[in-house]
Amino acid sequence: MSRVWISRAEALKRLEVKPQTLYAYVSRQRIAAKSDPAHPRKSLYALDDIERLSRRAPGRVPLRPGPTGPAPAYDALPPGLTGGTITRGEAAIDTEISITVEGRHYYRGRDCISLAATENFETVAALLWQSRHPNPFGPLKPRPDVNFPGGPRTRVLSMLSRRLEEEAMTEIQPERDLGNEAASLLNEMVDAVTNGGPRLFFHQRLARAWKVYDNKDTDLLRRALVLSADTSLDEATLAVRVSAATMGPLAIPLIAGFGTMTSPKLGGRISRAESYVTQVRRTGNPLALAKSLLERGLELPGFERDYSPSEPLRAKALIDAAPQLGEDLKTVLRVGEDLTGQPAGMSLALALIGRHLDLPREAPVTLYGIGRSAGWLAHAIEQMQAGSSPKARLRYIGPHPQIVD
Image (cartoon, rainbow, N blue to C red; front, side, top):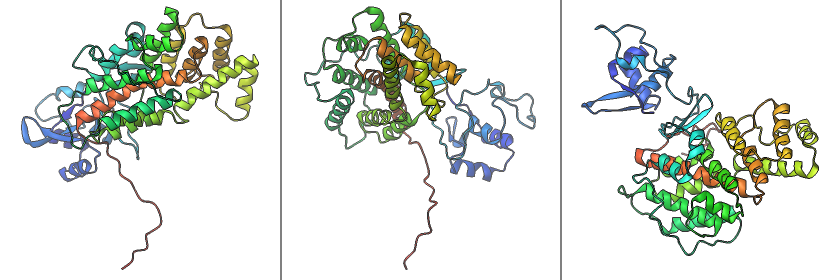
């Protein structure tokens, strides 16, 4: 959603401050400002930042009525679609890629659950990137050297490192086709995981590598990729946007995102959920195992308290798409919901699908990483096109330095 910009006079009226205070807010990066296209010597100010500082709900009219009649049209705007009030220590990043509203997540204004019901992952990636071409993957040629040693995570990082060496830049190249660059990276990422093969859709290539042959089962992989493509801002996406600001190859932010995702807090959740589901199957007593974890003060895998707001609906959409889920796996879900009082997140949904399809151990987190890569590349492209860098200030709180004369 695009930002709304207002004049200096209106900003001063809403804030009820002097011009010097407004300029101080801008210099401290508390209010975004830009040149007025109609009057380059004047500035416009971001309405959402001003509303936050004035502690008013978005869309509220100024404290004092305008002298010449009704307030401008932007006073009647619906509530802003924002990530909430910014608190001390947080930085705001403007994006038009995705938003969560009442638990539903939208990619470029389209409901991701509806997209997962009908669209291929490639189509959703092109939507996220606002690609110049409806199918940026069509012209890509397969590379012969896609076999890397190690597990899926190692193979992906090896592929990205090679691309980084191949595309090292010494100067900024403003005319790059970022959509094509993103498509080739995602294509090679899938090839690195699957060791190449026929030019099928990505979910079909993964299914072939993981020996999933039933069309309904293969379709679960497609849904998982689409539902994982983007989520609310987390550490991995922040790492992507910061590294993208260097304007280097897209392999740099993709390495940053994929590497951060493999941490215990993000991808580690999926691995723990997968291990938990495997252990339940081995013991045959999900209730006893879940209670033992909770009694030890541990969170039940897949039912973490701090997952993103859209996870419950996305997880439910993925699980509901597998009507043949085994009764033992359904019991894992029911027990967790009963004991924690909250719905499952994507980590458990991916783990359940992984066991349902009998995928390799690292497949659920690999599937998630490939899905998230489409969103990371969208954030990298948006950051590069903005031409700015996420700003943060390091505030020293250590001991006073011993200054030597």
